[in-house]
Every structure is written in C-alpha cells, then in structure tokens.
Image (cartoon, rainbow, N blue to C red; front, side, top):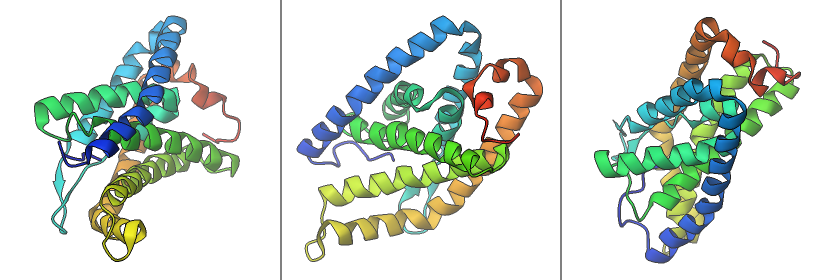
Length: 225
C-alpha cells in the first residue's frame, strides 16, 4: 500500500486524497469522542497505533521484484471500530513517508484510502460477519486481520490499474498483473498477520482484561470467546 512519491498521475493523487479526507475527519471526531467517554482506553489505542506502525513499516522483498508489507490495521478496527483507524493510519503513513521513505506525500491519500479506510472497514465487517456465522473469537480475529490485509492490496492494485491501464486489455488486464505481483508474497504475509493478531489479542486479554472488557468487541453476542 506504499505507492511511492510521484508515481501516480496528479489527477489520481488528488482524487484519492479527496476520497480519503472525509474518513480521516470523521475518524478524528470519533476518536476524540471515545477518549472523552473512555479515557482509560488511551493505552490500548496506543498499542493499536504502535502495532499498525511496526507491522506496516516492515518492508519485505517480493520474488516478483516488488515489496510487500503487513498492515496491522485490522487489530485496531476490531477493538475500536474502523473509523478510528483512518486518522491513526494517516499519522502512521505520514511518518513513514517522511522518516522511512515508504510511500510519499503526493500519494498519501491513495495509501491512506487503501490501508486506513478499506482495510479497517473490511476487517470490521468480516469480524462481525464471522461472529454471526458462529465462528470463535480467535477465528473471527484471524479472518478479519488476514482478509483485510489482502483487500488493502486488492485496493492498491485497483488504484495502480486505474492509473496505468494496459494498452491492450485496459484496466482489467492491468489489475490482474498488479494483483498477481502482490499475491505471491502478500498471501503468506496476510496469514502471518492474522496469526500474530490473535496472539497479540490473547496476550492483551491475559494482562489487560479489565480494559478489554469495556470494548464493544465483547458486547457482540454472535462472536463466541
């Protein structure tokens, strides 16, 4: 999801920025509201932000010549809702662009939209859908984290295909090429992220159970512990 600086045409970069801004603004409002109502959750929010920063900062080479990254946004989306991850993801991606040369400023909107909007909303929806299907909490978390990771890169593939359509096959053919490049390394990374998310959550549940009990996660009747 780290499209590099200057890679997207100006119109596409601007369009994705415009698309991402409302989600970030709404997320800031929801974060402020949650902190006012539940100040004790600040520490958990910090853990979720750190988890996202560390995972998404890992730059792993792909056998196809590209680079792949975990995202880490599914964890926070399940704990605090998807809206909260938009501003958190924005800050994470901004610092990575400035300090680590991952992504860029002109492509920040596109990267935020894929990692901090699509990923978290997908994770939240998948988690609750799995719960309604009577999946265990661990399975629901795994599916939410791993599939949201994959959908982040599906979104990036769409963004790149739309900006650079194949001369013969158009956007569809270009999407298949970009998605194929990412899939080689992203599928095992997504599985690894799902497993790590479950492990981190179980550790938090063991050592910080009172704060976790206050989250809506445990109010979801369909998800079994």
